[in-house]
Image (cartoon, rainbow, N blue to C red):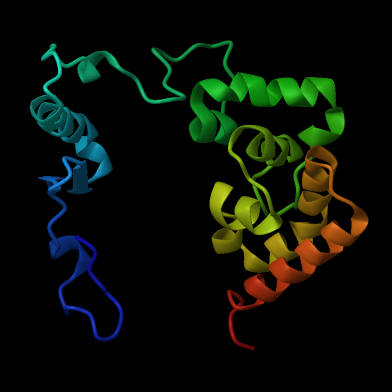
Length: 192
């Protein structure tokens, strides 16, 4: 259930809105799940699959979600694993991200002194998270826009350069990306 929580919405506090899920079967037999929350993903999967088994007349097998781990999961803390922000953000992928720095030391440099992101994370976003523009990286793959909009504007040219190199774009694309991102990010700066 989507609820508008802006002006003209239901007036309910967002925490009071039900976060339960519902499995619905269309007339055509399409099984859909609506609602839910991350912390109940296993139950959501079980409920959805139970309905899919009924509708599709599939073999009913025991649920295996209890043994499945989300991408990035680590079984235990390994002293050989990187620590800090990259480990918390990327889990088991932290090793691969650090490997990018081993291949190109410039990727170990922070994209801005006030932001906790290195160039390697930008490259990782393009290669492995389907980031395709500066806004993708600074607003969605990282929290840079929300953490420090001004710093993210200042980091935009470096981010654009890394993306352009990886994605095969030219200097005109870089300039366009920086301009578009700057226009967006200016709206996040406090009024002066």
